Amino acid sequence: MLSPRRPGWTAPFTTLTAVDSIAQLKGLAVHQNQVGDPDGFAVLVRSVNRPFQLLPIVQPEVPMLVLASRDPLRMWYGLAAEFGPAANPWLEQLDWWIDPVSGNDENAGDASTRALATIYEWQRRFEGARFSRGYRIRMLGPIPELNLQLELAALGHLNFDFSPASVTLDQAHVAAYVPPNGVNQYGILSLVEPLNLNPYLFARVRFLTGPAAGGVSWIALVNPLGGGVNTARVTQPVWTDPDNALSPLLTLAHVVPGAGDLLAIEALASVGAVGTDFFQGSSSDFGLNSVVISHAAVGGATAAPTVVQCSNAQPSPTFLWACDLRAQTLHGNVQAIGCSCHADGFGIYATGVDWLNAITLEDSLIWDGMLTSNAFLFDSLVQGAQLFPATGRTSMAGHVAVFDAPGDGIVAYGAGVCIESAGLLYGTGNLGVGVNLRSGGAILDYLTKPTVTGTVNDTSIHGNVRAWGLIPWFDPASGAGIVATVP
Image (cartoon, rainbow, N blue to C red):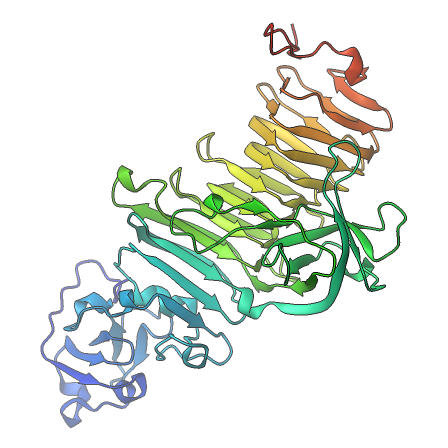
């Protein structure tokens, strides 16, 4: 934003000179007597391609925007780059590096050795810009937050990539992988090495070689079939290209690791609360641009559970690729692919603004209770937790499984709740019933008969516990089927 932030301020440039660095600006003695110079004296700092104006002190602001001068009553206030005499060169630089430890906000940011220090400086360099190409911003360490306000044209694409900051915890080779069977088991991964996977429960696996190279999966349960501690129930390995100009959904694919393939178990760099709000020049740009946050631990390993808030218009969502989402709230137009969803025991509220701006989870692991409103689940695994559809629609497709829930697997509350499935819904080991439709007005409308079970029975419809096999079912030929609702 422009500085100073005072309504009606119109101090004009009285003169304009240039220096090479921030340090030179701070030490600048204008006319050898800065105190006597008029308000509005401006200096272009070449290292950041930004003019600074000498103005009376208004209020403190963040570093690199407001700098001390040699006048005790005035400060140097940074302006947006496009207000300077030179055109903004940063739009031509498509690859950026940010190093919170060793970077410098006066660097070019075009290599790891010339990285910026903060995401704030990256945003300032693009202030007022409209993105119409693809950019990758590589993060070399954790950051406290990622709050973005951007304008994207058609083919505008940004990938905030935290993978360079990932830490390898262990490596092993694949002995075998068995995909979900649609009945009583999800993906099973076994290793060649006798590696004890218990310390890596809920950790991320990234495949390094073979047909699944670049794909990710999450460890949901160790030794699910009694095959040993080097065997785990995992989410379906999935791969996508986060730098796709239009959408990572266009390249999303399930991948199958082969015997002997090398994998890594990794810890991800943390980022605090995430907020994105990107604007589009016209409705013709919808669906032709996107923002991706990849390989990040949102909330961090020790930070309190946080919020992911995305206010982008459908169909141009914010994508989260291969992230560990330690967030209590997922809100807005968010699509998570290959992610882990939990909140360190607090529970998760996943809510879309409406049905066109829904929360979408693809090939993800849920291991804390999740309350949903206007949500899609595709090929996702719920392990040791429950789903609570509350309002709007919760739709499922592909393989969706609920295993070992501490009560009923899926519990629907509230009038007007609609649970739909166009794929396979199954699971075992749940302590209650598989699906419990508790409140009046709840609707169960499946295209494929589920097989999710609990120790009590398959389902409870308004207190009536039944087995799925005893309930009339949808017949595509006649159009007849069950609609469970209060008369």
